[in-house]
Amino acid sequence: MSAQNDNMNDADTLSHFRDSIDNIDAALVFMLAERFKITQAVGEFKASSSLPPADPAREEKQIERLRQLARDAKLDPDFTEKFLRFIIDEVIRHHQQIRDGK
Amino acid sequence: MSAQNDNMNDADTLSHFRDSIDNIDAALVFMLAERFKITQAVGEFKASSSLPPADPAREEKQIERLRQLARDAKLDPDFTEKFLRFIIDEVIRHHQQIRDGK
Image (cartoon, helix red, strand yellow):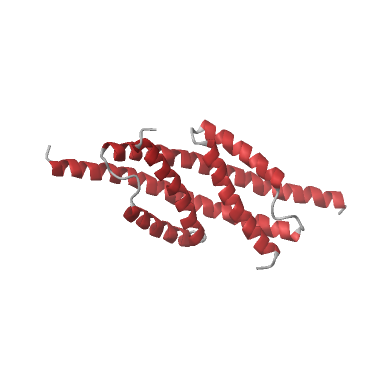
C-alpha cells in the first residue's frame, strides 16, 4: 500500500469517528436546550413561590444518582460530577437572574 | 385553600419538573459515555498514527457548528461553546494519557 493510500485510510477512519461525535454533540445540544427550558420554568416557579435559587439537598441527591449512572455506563464518576456541577452552576445563575427580575 | 394544600401543590409542581430533569440527565450521561467510547478509539488511533492529541482546526469547526445548532435550539451559544470546551479538554487529557501510555 502506498503512503498516499495509508493517509487516505487514516483520513477516512478519523472522519468516520468524527461523524459519530458530531451526531452525539447535536443530540447533547438539543437535550441541553430541553433541560434549560425546564429549569427556566423551575426558576420562574421558585421566584413566584419565594423558594431559593439553589437547593443543596436536591443537588447532593442528583450528584449521587448520576455518579451511579456513570458507573453503570462506564463513564468516570468524577468527570460526571464536574459535568453536573457545570450545568447546575449555569442553572443557578439563571434562577438568580429570574429572581432579580433581569 | 389551606397553607398545607398550597405547600403540597408546590412540592408536586417541583417534583414533576425534577422528574423530567432527572430523565434528561440520565440521557445526557449515557450519551456522554458513548461519546467518550468513540473519543477513546480516536485517541488510540491518533497515538498509533502519531497524530497530535489536539486538533485546533477541527475544534474551531465543531464550535461554529454547535453555536449554530444552539441558536436553532434557543440555547445560549456562549454557554454551548463553554460546554463543548469542557468536554474537549477532558478528551484531550485522555488522548495525552493514551499517547504517554498511561
